[in-house]
Amino acid sequence: MPTIHQLRGLEILDSRGRPTVQATCTLASGARATVSVPSGASTGAAEALELRDRDPARYRGLGCRRAVGHINGPIHDALAGRAFADQAALDQALIALDGTPNKARLGANAVLAVSLAFARAVAAERNVPLYQHFADILAGTPNAALRSLPRPTINLFSGGKHAGGQVPIQDVLVVAASAQSMDEALAMTAAVFMAAADLIRDRYAMRTLTADEGGLAPPFAGAQAMLDDAVAAIRAAGYLPGHEVALAIDVAASHFYHDGRYHLDGDALTPAQMIERIRGWLDTYPIVSVEDGLAEDDWAHWPALRAAIGGRALVLGDDLLCTNPARIRRAIHEHAADALLLKVNQIGTLSEAAEACRLARAAGWRVTVSARSGETEDDWLADLAVGWAGDQIKVGSVTQSERLAKYNRLLAIEAETGLPLVAWPAPE
Ligand code: PGA
Ligand code: ZN
Image (cartoon, rainbow, N blue to C red; front, side):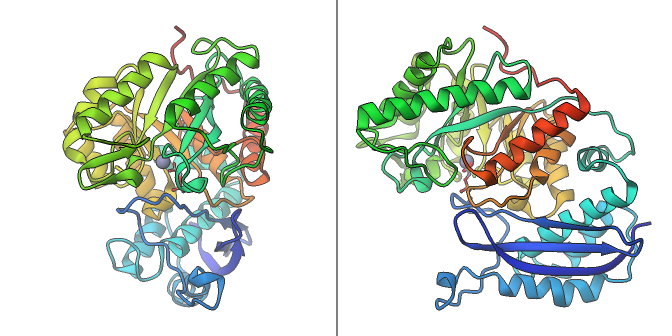
C-alpha cells in the first residue's frame, strides 16, 4: 500500500504571471512526483475555493504562501507516515482534514496539488504510465482498458474575460472534424490558426497579439464578426467548413447576464431570445459544441436551450456544473445539459472529479476535459484526458508552451499507444 513519506509545497508562477501551487509527494518506497495546478479567471460561483494570501503588497493579494504553508504544515503533518489503499482513501483524508464544503480552510489549490502529486507518485511506484493510472482510478480496477484519444478543441479567437472584454463570447475554437489522428488534428488546426492570423492582420491592421489562452483577439465588431472570420479562416486554410473543420464556442454567458437579461452586442436579450440567438448561430455556422450558452444560475432556461439545440451541438456546462457531482445530478434530472466540461480544480480532488465524470458518462453525456486560463508547463491534463477517455480536450491555442506541453504530451501518448482519435462530431 502506498505510504506517504513527505509532502512539500512550493509557490510558483502560472502562465499569466500569477502565483499558483506546486506539490511534491514522496512515498516510503522512494517514488516521488511533482505536480503544478492551474488557476481560472472565468471562475464559476460554485467552484471550490482557491486560497489566496490577500496581502495587497504582494502579487496584488494573489500570493499562494498560505496554501503552500498548509501543504508543508497541517497536510504533511496529518498524512506523513500513513498508508492509503487507493486514491479515494487519500482524497477522503484530505476532505476530512479540510472539513469545509468547498475546501476553504486548506485551499482547493493546496488540496488538489496533493491529490494529483499522490496519484503521479503512485503511478511511478506502480511503474505504469500516468494515463493508465488515471484510467485505473476511474474504473476502480488495475489495467483498465484505454479507449481513445480526445479530439482537441483549440482556441482560435478569444474574447470575454480572457481578452479584455471587447467581445462577450469567450472562445471560438477549431475542431478538426475530419482528422484521423492527434498529429493530423494539430496540423490542421495550426493551418487554420495561421490563416486567421493573416486574415486579422489584413482586416484589422493589427499585430497578432494573443489572449490568455493564446487565442487571437482583434477588436471584432461582435459575435457574428468573430464567427464569420473563423469560417473565413477555415476556408482560407483550404478546408471545407463543417465537413473538415468545425467550430465550438464557449459563450461564458454568466459574465454578461445581469438582472435576467443577456447583454450581448448592444442588445438586452431575454433568456428565450438568447436561446434563439444561439440557434441562429447554429443555422449559419458549423458549430458542434456550445459551452455555457446560458448563465450559471439561469437553471430555469437550460432545459429549453437543450431542447432547442441538443443533438445538433453539445450543450456543454462549465460554470453551470463546476465539475460538482451535486450540480451534475441536478442537470441530468432537469435535462439541462448533455455534456460536462471537466476541470479538476473546480472541485478540488481527483476522486470527486472522477465521480463527476462517472455520473456524466452514466447519463450518456460527452465529457470535455479542460485546462484553465492560468496554466503551467505541467502536462498531467493530457494523461487525464486519455485515461478518462475524454471526448474532447480543451487546452487553449497552439502557440504557448503551457498549452503545447499538453499537446506535445498527447502526441507522445499517441505514438506510444496507437490509440485512435474519438469519432466526434459525426461526419456530415
Ligand atoms: P477559466 O476559463 O480557466 O478562466 O475559468 C476557461 C473556461 O471558461 O472554459
Ligand atoms: Zn468555460
